[in-house]
Length: 335
Image (cartoon, rainbow, N blue to C red; front, side):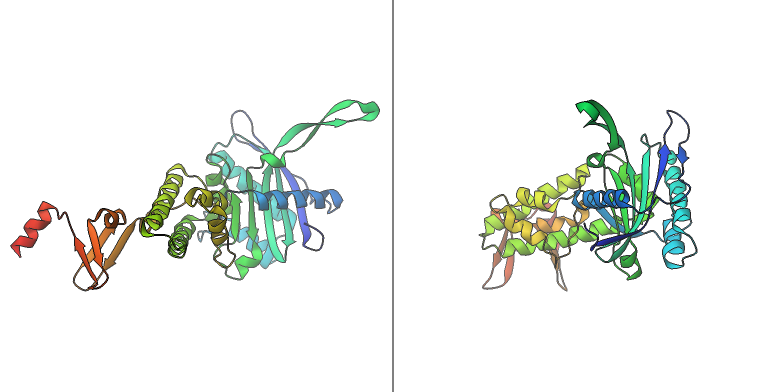
């Protein structure tokens, strides 16, 4: 990221201190940090690590601003201009402290809050950074310890795209999912809802996979195998809570040509999110046909076509069902 692609309008570092027992404490910086070269390099690293980190979630603001104050704070600062950046940062830290204490989060750290224009988008960043011990070579080639911010271990960070929010975009909040239950309390801090996003994105993924299978010149067995494998992989991710990585999942679903599927899933025109946990409710179409007409409804597994339990005749446009269960036979004989 260079000066031509971003401009920082505000950056401040506060500190969240976690005690062994009891509530956390905060150390507040009285004013924003100077926007000098070290601040610019720090922001560049944050943006780079945030952009490159897999496993992000996406969403929008909750409507209940009493229970989720973040949209009100951002609006008063960025839209109505009734709150300066330093006051905004202190309000955000107080809100973060509340969420951390409610969930009894173990780790504190340095709270970085910044507002920057990144590739033309007005964004608000927040990250909880840990410190780690490194080594430097000092005077006389001496070996010295040197504490520094541990960006490779970054687990808690989020971005609010203010421009997209004001433009009415479907999703404008992104956050690292982190390990364990990090995403839960941090989403609450951001005032972020992402439940429907996961369902909608899973439906879009299923439609894309189905279309991909139809266009790969596979025979019926190969097409069914691809979709059944996709169902198995995505269902396991839904059970485990694993975040979707489009490139990785392409290799699992279509190992014969993973680059081809990966390119399809990551096509910018598709605008398919990564980093969400697949919603199992949307996966059934991968392995099941479902249709209805005026006088009937029908649902069956793809495997039924291979086993012969369901037979489709293209010439007469009819379906034949075999192995009719006894309870249905009795009902039909009564008619």
